[in-house]
Length: 84
Image 1 (cartoon, rainbow, N blue to C red):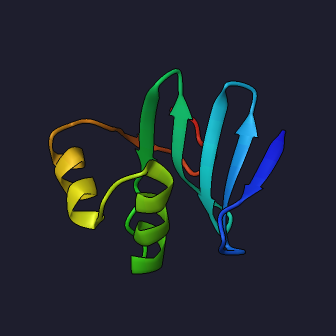
Image 2: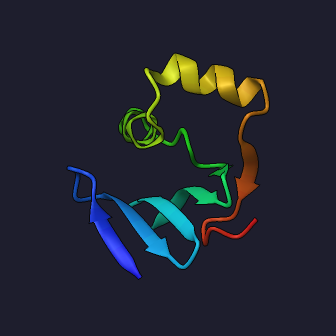
Image 3: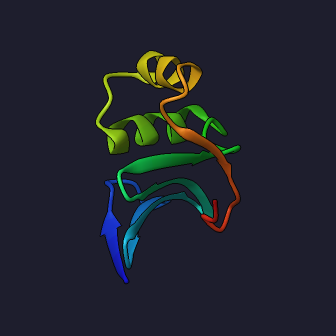
């Protein structure tokens, strides 16, 4: 397992096997696995979480993120442990 810093002590990227987890505090917000990205129900918990999630995903802004979610580009509702 490898833990990467994101510039914010409360947001981390954890690489475990083939999965990459983006966490906020103790909750998993997003998981990258086999080219797919899944978001938890807490992806928009706060503006700060959204800001760091947008950065992690390499998107322009929260509007782009919301558009991609609406278009079904991300899987939804992983649980807070990062399980699909």
